[in-house]
Amino acid sequence: MADAPRGGAPGDGQPGPPDQAGASSSRPPGRPRDAALDQAILTAAERQLHERGYAGMSLEAVAAAAGTTTPSLRRRFRGKTELASAVIDTLRIEPLPEPTGVPRADALAVLENLRANMLRPDGMATLGSILAEENRHPLLLERFRQRLVEPRRERLRRALLAGATQGQLPARLDLDVSVSLLVGSCYARYLAAGTIPADWADRALSVIWPAAPASGA
Image (tube, rainbow, N blue to C red):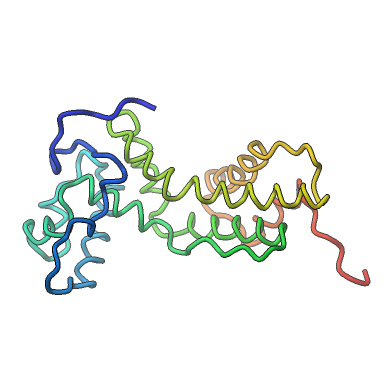
């Protein structure tokens, strides 16, 4: 990945390290924030991010669209990078499901969760904007990977490994390739048709991991 830009101050368009992007990490104690305004700001920021890109998004325009002032927005987010990072953190509308101990069911649940989050309104458009900024602001894509991509891939990898360990999958299954094939099939289906069928997760998983026959069948 390209080296992170240097010399930028918060709010000047230069992304800071992903672990510094929490909006509430340095906020002093005081009156509770308005949750409705917080959501309005994030909604306005996401709209600008996928319509104008990171370079075209501005704190002033976001504040105006959210019905607040720039100083009020800056009390929540120190700069544009924090705001864009907060938008990335909201792209998952459903949390990853907790493991059940049934490997195939766990793998299926992860893929169904991916489908639900991919179909979030404007979610893919926002991802496209983040990808478009990869060369100029690589830390935005890095945050997306850390917060959304890597946890899902790791959870799916663990489910496949458990299946291989229990003899439900080949012992020498290439886990990295299998994870990429399963996740990638969802993106490929979306790009081909603009949607992902409700049964897609099970159909894709069944290619490498057929469901066990029903008891008594």
